[in-house]
Every structure is written in C-alpha cells, then in structure tokens.
Length: 94
Image 1 (cartoon, rainbow, N blue to C red):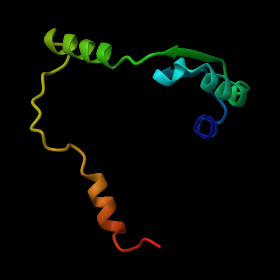
Image 2 (cartoon, rainbow, N blue to C red; image 1 turned 90 degrees about the horizontal axis):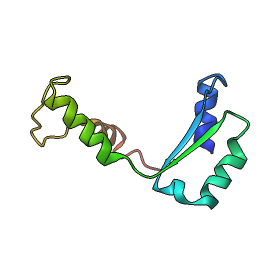
Image 3 (cartoon, rainbow, N blue to C red; image 1 turned 135 degrees about the vertical axis):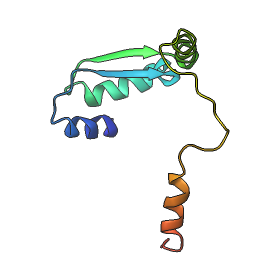
Image 4 (spheres, rainbow, N blue to C red; image 1 turned 180 degrees about the horizontal axis):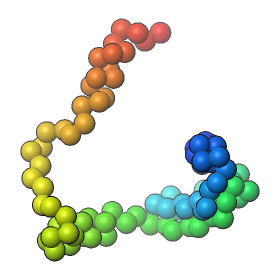
C-alpha cells in the first residue's frame, strides 16, 4: 500500500487503475488490506496468478516469427550495478 501511494504521488495523483497480480493475489486477506488502504486512489482490478510462462511463450513466438531478433546470451550478467554500488559503499556501514 505504501508503494502504491508513493507511485501515485509520482504520477501527481493521475492514476488510471491499480492492478494486483501474482500468487499473493489469491489471498483475500491480502487483497482486503490493500484495497482498504488504496481504493481512494483509483479503481482496483485483481488478477490472481502468475503469468511468467505465458510471457515466455509470447516472447518465443515473437522471436520465431521475426517480430523480434533472436538473441544469444553468454551467461554473463547484463547488469553489474549491484557490484558497483557495493564497492562504492564498502566500509561506509554504520
């Protein structure tokens, strides 16, 4: 709820909808708690479940149909930001 409120401020309150997804959206207690706290911001839709497999399948279809290039991954991390952040803050812990 705090994060939804934070995003709403970034959007200057111009929020069209709030969508709650994932396995946690199967929990009515979770949904009730979030809805109670953020329903004044925008209409809320609930889509319980995880859609990772569907997204992967659609990506494969786009690649195989030529709509997206097929990429080769080396296994090397594509983002090294965490290491840079850790190096910058090393020794600064209180």
